[in-house]
Amino acid sequence: MKKLTAIFLCAVLLLTSGCGGMTPATKHTRYQAEFLSLFDTVTTIVGYADSKEDFTELAGQIRDKLEEYHRLYSIYDDFAGVNNIKTINDNAGMAPVPVDSRIIDLLQYAKEQYAGTKGTLNIALGSVLKIWHDYREAGSDDPENAELPPMELLRQANEHTNIDDLVIDAAASTVYLKDPLMRLDVGAIAKGYATEQVAQHFENQGVTNLLLSVGGNVRALGGKFDEGADTVIPWAVGVRNPDLSSTESTLMSVLAEDCSIVSSGIYERYYTVDGVEYHHIIDPETLMPTTYYAQVTIVCKDSGLADALSTAAFVLPRDEALAYINAMDGVEACWVLEDGSQFYSDGFEALKK
Ligand code: ADP
Ligand code: MG
Image (cartoon, rainbow, N blue to C red):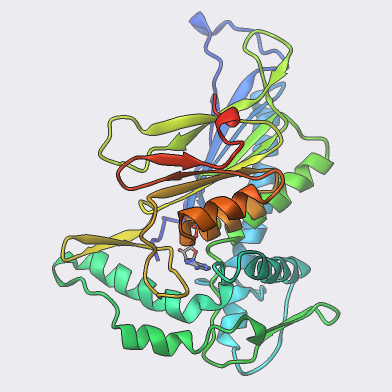
């Protein structure tokens, strides 16, 4: 696992600049906070408050909520007193594990998304994904000797990826993996699902005009304040350029108000074998990294759905992927190919700034 140092870095920045520091704080003063310890990635919060203290307080509350989900949904780490997804994996074939209702909710949602994405998104692929993960880590640490996993090994692991072996007992609040060799990997969905739950929690408390980004999984609560005015307008959220060699780090900006923008890309996690890059989204049919796209961006209200679809739309070929997204209400997508060309779902163009 790419381990980020477990430091709690909270930098609260006042974003409105004022010559000589004499700008009076209005209720539309904009602040930003960053944390470096959750979901193996960077969390950024942008919002407005009466004072820096108020904003720091709110940002801390959001961080704490996200951290609860981070602990519950981890497949890598144990936390004292917490039964998490790793605990479920460690007990595969042995015993049902009593878990928090937020785990039951995530796993039920993931099962629905398995059906909804025609099996392209399968959290029961853990045994296959672990092999790729281990070869990627070894290959990144020692690039000279980087190797692809043997297909035979992947095929054997793929015998243990049946989502029906994930037994959720909502009444008893337990989860059991019937197959002792099956493992869950919620990496494609947990970050977005957690972001959505936390966003809804704070929305219900009246928080608005806030932009939450958990490792590029962006969720807007309301819009932002138009500079120097009282009107609320959509946030402009930058979509990262998948071409890391380009001087332009942003590909485009997308307008977001009360909605999510989530990208999946081949640049997130990859390693190189014999000059070819192998990334981290695996086609359950071929058991190999998908080769169609460099990046997929999904825009829709729910961040959990956006995360699920960002992975599923990565695995489907162009015609199927387009038809799939166009058939869904309130979901738009942009695909970027390795040569930099792009294609969009029917309503995506209208969302661009
Ligand atoms: P990111 O982690 O960059 O946000 P994604 O949301 O696309 O990107 O999730 C990728 C992760 O999902 C991988 O690291 C792996 O753990 C998992 N994964 C890869 N392929 C699949 C798949 N077909 N079904 C379910 N999970 C997958
Ligand atoms: Mg995803």
